[in-house]
Image (cartoon, rainbow, N blue to C red; front, side, top):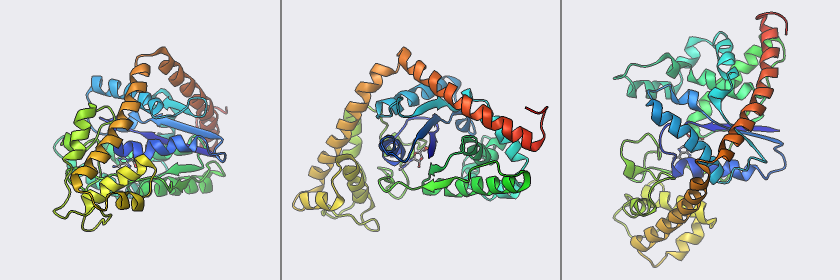
Length: 332
Ligand code: AMP
Protein backbone atom coordinates (compact mmCIF):
# COMPACT_ATOMS: atom_id res chain seq x y z
CA UNK A 1 0.00 0.00 0.00
CA UNK A 2 1.50 3.33 -1.04
CA UNK A 3 0.80 6.66 0.62
CA UNK A 4 1.79 10.02 -0.86
CA UNK A 5 1.42 13.59 0.26
CA UNK A 6 3.08 16.96 -0.13
CA UNK A 7 3.06 20.47 1.26
CA UNK A 8 3.79 23.67 -0.63
CA UNK A 9 6.94 25.51 0.45
CA UNK A 10 5.15 28.82 0.25
CA UNK A 11 5.84 30.68 3.46
CA UNK A 12 5.89 29.72 7.09
CA UNK A 13 4.90 26.18 7.85
CA UNK A 14 2.27 26.49 10.55
CA UNK A 15 0.94 24.61 13.52
CA UNK A 16 -2.05 23.88 11.24
CA UNK A 17 0.22 22.13 8.73
CA UNK A 18 1.81 20.19 11.58
CA UNK A 19 -1.37 19.06 13.36
CA UNK A 20 -3.41 18.65 10.16
CA UNK A 21 -0.79 16.93 8.04
CA UNK A 22 2.84 16.35 9.14
CA UNK A 23 1.99 14.73 12.50
CA UNK A 24 -0.17 12.21 10.65
CA UNK A 25 2.56 11.37 8.15
CA UNK A 26 4.79 10.64 11.13
CA UNK A 27 2.16 8.36 12.70
CA UNK A 28 1.67 6.46 9.42
CA UNK A 29 5.33 5.52 9.21
CA UNK A 30 4.74 2.96 11.91
CA UNK A 31 1.56 1.47 10.48
CA UNK A 32 2.11 -1.90 8.92
CA UNK A 33 -0.37 -1.47 6.09
CA UNK A 34 1.86 1.12 4.43
CA UNK A 35 4.86 -0.40 2.76
CA UNK A 36 5.78 2.76 0.91
CA UNK A 37 5.46 6.37 2.04
CA UNK A 38 6.36 9.28 -0.25
CA UNK A 39 6.38 12.80 1.14
CA UNK A 40 7.34 15.64 -1.14
CA UNK A 41 7.93 19.35 -1.17
CA UNK A 42 5.45 20.76 -3.68
CA UNK A 43 7.57 23.55 -5.11
CA UNK A 44 5.94 23.38 -8.55
CA UNK A 45 2.59 24.01 -6.91
CA UNK A 46 3.98 26.97 -5.00
CA UNK A 47 4.74 28.92 -8.18
CA UNK A 48 1.09 29.03 -9.23
CA UNK A 49 1.16 32.30 -7.34
CA UNK A 50 4.12 34.73 -7.50
CA UNK A 51 7.09 33.73 -5.30
CA UNK A 52 10.30 35.52 -4.48
CA UNK A 53 13.13 33.40 -5.90
CA UNK A 54 15.39 33.54 -2.84
CA UNK A 55 12.53 33.00 -0.42
CA UNK A 56 11.29 29.99 -2.38
CA UNK A 57 14.75 28.35 -2.34
CA UNK A 58 15.00 28.93 1.38
CA UNK A 59 11.50 27.62 2.02
CA UNK A 60 12.12 24.41 0.06
CA UNK A 61 15.11 23.44 2.20
CA UNK A 62 13.38 24.65 5.31
CA UNK A 63 10.33 22.45 4.69
CA UNK A 64 12.58 19.43 4.17
CA UNK A 65 14.25 20.14 7.53
CA UNK A 66 10.84 20.64 9.17
CA UNK A 67 9.67 17.24 7.90
CA UNK A 68 12.69 15.62 9.53
CA UNK A 69 12.58 17.71 12.69
CA UNK A 70 8.90 16.75 13.10
CA UNK A 71 9.81 13.08 13.11
CA UNK A 72 9.69 11.83 9.53
CA UNK A 73 12.22 9.04 9.41
CA UNK A 74 14.15 8.73 6.14
CA UNK A 75 14.52 5.01 6.82
CA UNK A 76 10.75 4.64 6.69
CA UNK A 77 9.76 7.16 4.04
CA UNK A 78 11.17 8.91 1.00
CA UNK A 79 11.34 12.70 1.03
CA UNK A 80 11.86 14.53 -2.25
CA UNK A 81 11.50 17.85 -4.02
CA UNK A 82 8.78 17.73 -6.66
CA UNK A 83 10.64 19.77 -9.29
CA UNK A 84 13.65 17.44 -9.08
CA UNK A 85 11.56 14.68 -10.65
CA UNK A 86 10.67 16.07 -14.10
CA UNK A 87 8.05 13.39 -14.79
CA UNK A 88 5.42 15.22 -12.73
CA UNK A 89 5.20 17.99 -15.33
CA UNK A 90 5.53 15.56 -18.22
CA UNK A 91 2.56 13.55 -17.01
CA UNK A 92 0.69 16.73 -16.23
CA UNK A 93 0.81 17.74 -19.91
CA UNK A 94 -0.46 14.34 -21.02
CA UNK A 95 -3.28 14.53 -18.48
CA UNK A 96 -4.13 18.11 -19.44
CA UNK A 97 -4.82 16.82 -22.92
CA UNK A 98 -7.26 14.38 -21.36
CA UNK A 99 -9.08 16.83 -19.09
CA UNK A 100 -11.87 19.21 -20.10
CA UNK A 101 -11.55 22.93 -19.40
CA UNK A 102 -14.94 22.88 -17.69
CA UNK A 103 -13.67 20.33 -15.19
CA UNK A 104 -10.91 22.61 -13.91
CA UNK A 105 -12.88 25.83 -14.20
CA UNK A 106 -15.46 24.61 -11.77
CA UNK A 107 -12.95 23.86 -8.97
CA UNK A 108 -13.91 26.01 -6.00
CA UNK A 109 -10.29 26.58 -4.99
CA UNK A 110 -9.56 28.02 -8.44
CA UNK A 111 -12.56 30.32 -8.13
CA UNK A 112 -11.44 31.52 -4.68
CA UNK A 113 -7.74 31.88 -5.44
CA UNK A 114 -8.23 33.53 -8.82
CA UNK A 115 -10.35 36.20 -7.14
CA UNK A 116 -7.49 36.93 -4.71
CA UNK A 117 -4.91 37.02 -7.51
CA UNK A 118 -6.89 39.33 -9.81
CA UNK A 119 -4.53 42.24 -9.15
CA UNK A 120 -1.42 40.25 -10.27
CA UNK A 121 -3.25 38.55 -13.12
CA UNK A 122 -4.38 34.94 -12.81
CA UNK A 123 -1.85 32.41 -14.15
CA UNK A 124 -2.89 29.44 -16.26
CA UNK A 125 -1.05 27.32 -13.66
CA UNK A 126 -3.63 28.29 -11.07
CA UNK A 127 -6.25 26.77 -13.36
CA UNK A 128 -4.33 23.61 -14.23
CA UNK A 129 -2.92 23.06 -10.71
CA UNK A 130 -5.37 20.19 -9.93
CA UNK A 131 -4.08 18.34 -13.02
CA UNK A 132 -0.52 18.60 -11.71
CA UNK A 133 -1.84 17.29 -8.40
CA UNK A 134 -3.46 14.38 -10.26
CA UNK A 135 -0.08 13.70 -11.88
CA UNK A 136 1.70 13.70 -8.49
CA UNK A 137 -0.71 11.03 -7.31
CA UNK A 138 -1.10 8.89 -10.43
CA UNK A 139 2.58 8.82 -11.32
CA UNK A 140 3.33 6.64 -8.29
CA UNK A 141 0.29 4.32 -8.36
CA UNK A 142 -0.68 5.88 -5.07
CA UNK A 143 -3.39 4.02 -3.17
CA UNK A 144 -4.10 6.52 -0.43
CA UNK A 145 -3.94 10.31 -0.39
CA UNK A 146 -4.78 12.33 2.70
CA UNK A 147 -7.36 14.97 1.97
CA UNK A 148 -8.65 17.87 3.92
CA UNK A 149 -12.00 19.34 2.91
CA UNK A 150 -10.29 21.83 0.61
CA UNK A 151 -8.60 19.10 -1.45
CA UNK A 152 -11.54 16.71 -1.72
CA UNK A 153 -12.73 18.11 -5.03
CA UNK A 154 -9.21 17.87 -6.45
CA UNK A 155 -8.88 14.21 -5.50
CA UNK A 156 -12.23 13.51 -7.13
CA UNK A 157 -10.92 15.12 -10.30
CA UNK A 158 -7.78 12.95 -10.12
CA UNK A 159 -9.99 9.88 -9.87
CA UNK A 160 -12.15 11.02 -12.81
CA UNK A 161 -9.07 11.66 -14.96
CA UNK A 162 -7.58 8.26 -14.05
CA UNK A 163 -10.80 6.39 -14.80
CA UNK A 164 -11.25 8.16 -18.12
CA UNK A 165 -7.64 7.48 -19.09
CA UNK A 166 -7.96 3.80 -18.16
CA UNK A 167 -11.07 3.52 -20.28
CA UNK A 168 -9.52 5.23 -23.27
CA UNK A 169 -6.05 3.65 -23.23
CA UNK A 170 -6.49 0.49 -21.17
CA UNK A 171 -5.67 -0.15 -17.55
CA UNK A 172 -2.89 2.28 -16.60
CA UNK A 173 -3.56 4.04 -13.32
CA UNK A 174 -4.44 2.92 -9.83
CA UNK A 175 -7.57 4.78 -8.73
CA UNK A 176 -6.54 6.64 -5.56
CA UNK A 177 -8.69 6.64 -2.46
CA UNK A 178 -9.02 9.50 0.01
CA UNK A 179 -7.45 8.88 3.37
CA UNK A 180 -9.04 10.70 6.24
CA UNK A 181 -6.97 10.30 9.33
CA UNK A 182 -9.07 9.99 12.48
CA UNK A 183 -6.41 12.00 14.29
CA UNK A 184 -6.18 14.85 11.81
CA UNK A 185 -7.25 18.18 13.31
CA UNK A 186 -8.38 21.33 11.56
CA UNK A 187 -6.73 24.32 13.20
CA UNK A 188 -8.32 27.74 12.95
CA UNK A 189 -6.87 31.26 12.83
CA UNK A 190 -6.00 32.73 16.22
CA UNK A 191 -7.37 36.13 15.27
CA UNK A 192 -10.45 34.95 13.40
CA UNK A 193 -11.42 31.44 14.55
CA UNK A 194 -14.01 31.15 11.79
CA UNK A 195 -11.16 30.95 9.26
CA UNK A 196 -8.58 28.18 8.79
CA UNK A 197 -5.08 28.89 10.14
CA UNK A 198 -3.12 29.63 6.99
CA UNK A 199 0.52 30.33 6.23
CA UNK A 200 -0.56 32.82 3.58
CA UNK A 201 -2.55 34.95 6.04
CA UNK A 202 -1.39 38.56 6.03
CA UNK A 203 -1.60 38.84 9.82
CA UNK A 204 1.24 36.84 11.46
CA UNK A 205 -0.66 36.88 14.77
CA UNK A 206 -3.27 34.63 13.16
CA UNK A 207 -0.90 31.67 12.85
CA UNK A 208 1.90 29.96 14.73
CA UNK A 209 4.86 29.28 12.51
CA UNK A 210 6.82 26.21 13.59
CA UNK A 211 9.91 28.42 13.45
CA UNK A 212 8.43 31.33 15.44
CA UNK A 213 10.43 32.64 18.37
CA UNK A 214 9.02 30.60 21.25
CA UNK A 215 8.04 33.61 23.39
CA UNK A 216 6.31 35.26 20.46
CA UNK A 217 4.43 32.04 19.72
CA UNK A 218 3.29 31.80 23.34
CA UNK A 219 2.12 35.42 23.23
CA UNK A 220 0.10 34.69 20.10
CA UNK A 221 -1.74 31.91 21.95
CA UNK A 222 -2.28 34.11 24.99
CA UNK A 223 -3.80 36.85 22.87
CA UNK A 224 -5.91 34.49 20.72
CA UNK A 225 -9.44 35.77 20.14
CA UNK A 226 -11.93 34.03 22.42
CA UNK A 227 -15.34 35.15 23.77
CA UNK A 228 -16.79 37.01 26.73
CA UNK A 229 -17.94 33.85 28.50
CA UNK A 230 -15.67 32.24 31.13
CA UNK A 231 -16.17 28.49 30.59
CA UNK A 232 -13.52 26.33 28.93
CA UNK A 233 -16.01 24.32 26.90
CA UNK A 234 -15.95 22.93 23.36
CA UNK A 235 -18.72 24.65 21.42
CA UNK A 236 -17.81 25.30 17.84
CA UNK A 237 -20.92 27.42 17.15
CA UNK A 238 -20.67 29.85 20.02
CA UNK A 239 -17.10 29.50 21.26
CA UNK A 240 -15.00 28.98 18.14
CA UNK A 241 -11.83 30.46 19.68
CA UNK A 242 -11.88 28.34 22.84
CA UNK A 243 -12.86 25.27 20.79
CA UNK A 244 -9.83 25.85 18.58
CA UNK A 245 -7.52 26.11 21.59
CA UNK A 246 -9.06 22.93 22.99
CA UNK A 247 -8.38 21.16 19.68
CA UNK A 248 -4.75 22.34 19.77
CA UNK A 249 -4.34 21.30 23.40
CA UNK A 250 -5.89 17.88 22.81
CA UNK A 251 -3.78 17.19 19.70
CA UNK A 252 -0.58 18.20 21.46
CA UNK A 253 -1.15 16.57 24.84
CA UNK A 254 -2.89 13.42 23.63
CA UNK A 255 -5.63 14.02 26.22
CA UNK A 256 -9.26 14.05 25.17
CA UNK A 257 -11.09 17.36 24.94
CA UNK A 258 -13.44 16.17 27.71
CA UNK A 259 -10.52 15.59 30.06
CA UNK A 260 -9.08 19.04 29.38
CA UNK A 261 -12.50 20.64 29.89
CA UNK A 262 -12.70 18.88 33.24
CA UNK A 263 -9.18 19.93 34.27
CA UNK A 264 -10.12 23.56 33.62
CA UNK A 265 -13.65 23.42 35.04
CA UNK A 266 -12.89 25.92 37.77
CA UNK A 267 -10.17 27.86 36.05
CA UNK A 268 -10.23 30.97 33.91
CA UNK A 269 -9.29 31.59 30.28
CA UNK A 270 -5.93 33.04 31.26
CA UNK A 271 -4.89 29.84 33.02
CA UNK A 272 -6.14 27.76 30.12
CA UNK A 273 -4.27 29.87 27.57
CA UNK A 274 -1.13 29.63 29.67
CA UNK A 275 -1.43 25.83 29.52
CA UNK A 276 -1.95 25.79 25.74
CA UNK A 277 0.89 28.29 25.25
CA UNK A 278 3.26 25.99 27.16
CA UNK A 279 2.24 22.97 25.08
CA UNK A 280 2.88 24.92 21.89
CA UNK A 281 6.16 26.27 23.28
CA UNK A 282 7.35 22.74 24.11
CA UNK A 283 6.52 21.49 20.62
CA UNK A 284 8.32 24.39 18.96
CA UNK A 285 11.37 24.00 21.21
CA UNK A 286 11.62 20.33 20.28
CA UNK A 287 11.16 20.89 16.54
CA UNK A 288 13.51 23.88 16.44
CA UNK A 289 16.30 22.10 18.28
CA UNK A 290 16.27 19.30 15.69
CA UNK A 291 15.71 21.75 12.83
CA UNK A 292 18.80 23.78 13.72
CA UNK A 293 20.93 20.65 13.68
CA UNK A 294 19.72 19.53 10.25
CA UNK A 295 19.10 22.67 8.22
CA UNK A 296 22.70 23.18 7.07
CA UNK A 297 23.78 19.55 7.18
CA UNK A 298 25.09 17.36 4.40
CA UNK A 299 22.75 14.68 5.70
CA UNK A 300 19.75 16.73 4.59
CA UNK A 301 21.08 16.77 1.03
CA UNK A 302 21.76 13.05 1.13
CA UNK A 303 18.19 12.37 2.26
CA UNK A 304 16.79 14.56 -0.53
CA UNK A 305 19.09 12.87 -3.06
CA UNK A 306 17.90 9.43 -1.98
CA UNK A 307 14.28 10.60 -2.17
CA UNK A 308 14.79 12.07 -5.64
CA UNK A 309 16.51 8.92 -6.90
CA UNK A 310 13.82 6.62 -5.57
CA UNK A 311 10.96 8.77 -6.89
CA UNK A 312 12.71 9.09 -10.26
CA UNK A 313 13.10 5.32 -10.47
CA UNK A 314 9.39 4.72 -9.86
CA UNK A 315 8.22 7.62 -12.01
CA UNK A 316 10.42 6.90 -15.02
CA UNK A 317 9.10 3.34 -15.26
CA UNK A 318 5.55 4.61 -15.07
CA UNK A 319 5.94 7.45 -17.56
CA UNK A 320 7.36 5.06 -20.17
CA UNK A 321 4.29 2.86 -19.82
CA UNK A 322 2.02 5.88 -20.14
CA UNK A 323 3.81 7.20 -23.24
CA UNK A 324 3.56 3.79 -24.85
CA UNK A 325 -0.18 3.71 -24.17
CA UNK A 326 -0.67 7.13 -25.72
CA UNK A 327 1.66 6.42 -28.67
CA UNK A 328 4.23 9.11 -27.91
CA UNK A 329 7.83 8.90 -29.18
CA UNK A 330 9.37 5.55 -30.16
CA UNK A 331 8.42 2.36 -28.37
CA UNK A 332 10.21 2.25 -25.05
P1 AMP B 1 -0.93 23.73 2.22
O1 AMP B 1 0.33 23.37 1.48
O2 AMP B 1 -0.83 24.94 3.04
O3 AMP B 1 -2.12 23.72 1.31
O4 AMP B 1 -1.22 22.60 3.29
C1 AMP B 1 -0.62 21.35 3.30
C2 AMP B 1 -1.33 20.43 4.22
O5 AMP B 1 -1.51 21.00 5.51
C3 AMP B 1 -2.72 20.03 3.72
O6 AMP B 1 -2.85 18.64 3.91
C4 AMP B 1 -3.66 20.78 4.59
O7 AMP B 1 -4.87 20.12 4.75
C5 AMP B 1 -2.88 20.90 5.90
N1 AMP B 1 -3.27 22.13 6.58
C6 AMP B 1 -2.97 23.40 6.22
N2 AMP B 1 -3.51 24.29 7.08
C7 AMP B 1 -4.19 23.57 8.01
C8 AMP B 1 -4.98 23.91 9.17
N3 AMP B 1 -5.19 25.16 9.53
N4 AMP B 1 -5.52 22.89 9.89
C9 AMP B 1 -5.31 21.60 9.52
N5 AMP B 1 -4.59 21.22 8.46
C10 AMP B 1 -4.04 22.19 7.70
